[in-house]
Image (tube, rainbow, N blue to C red; front, top):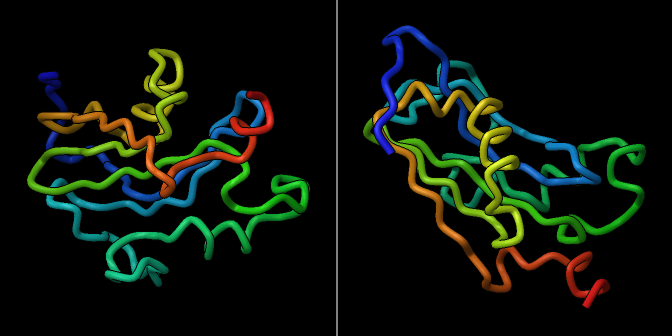
Length: 132
């Protein structure tokens, strides 16, 4: 996908959940190479992004419903070299949800966006299992 954007527009990277038709994010502003523009304490093992489990604990119970971090479908946005990679639970790979993710993270400002369905245990959602 080829998208043109202004050089001074903001891009974000981070993690997200899709909860009852709404997108909940933990994100930070970054430049098009993925370098954070703000001082932020990342929770991922690599120290360059957020960890779903750690960030879920910071959300209010009105959002989490006291459910585990892996209850709802989730994903992550990585930004490197003017390109975004969106890793997500396959059930989130729908045009309406992808548009919301793109808008929320400013992905239209990058030269390329790659969406990767991740059906592994890493992005598996308990909500999906309950509905099967």
